[in-house]
Image (cartoon, rainbow, N blue to C red; front, side, top):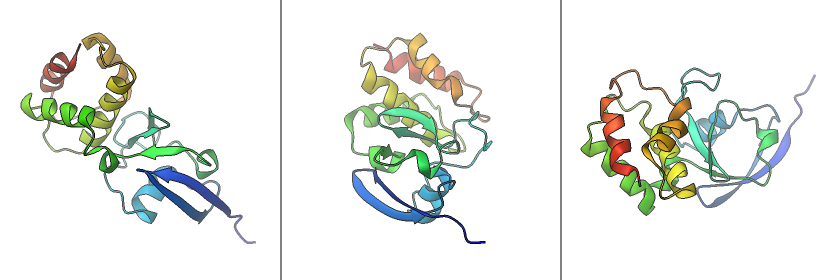
Length: 155
């Protein structure tokens, strides 16, 4: 029995991509294995830790939960594509200055999620930013640095 394949056309970090993939291939695998974008990390594989969070049409989404058949015509941004964006630069600077980084495994998902939240609401309160990060876990920092970074970013 042969595996069904589809032609997937979508945009990743501003570049149009056309791939032949299984309709059930996860976005996380496409990004990491096919496109060599290793910012999103495999964590829990069930959408609860946020390590694989990317932006889909501007909203933070766990890449482990999205299948290729759900991506047709959509826009995906990974941390690699956010690097030169002023909102992301502000988020990254706050995370660094607050000491909200340790091993860095969760950092791409947290930084991407905060970038999306601030893009969508530049005057977001600390409470709103904390709510945006509800699906992102960090097992190293104890969250005090992250709370400080959020307070710094809040409008």
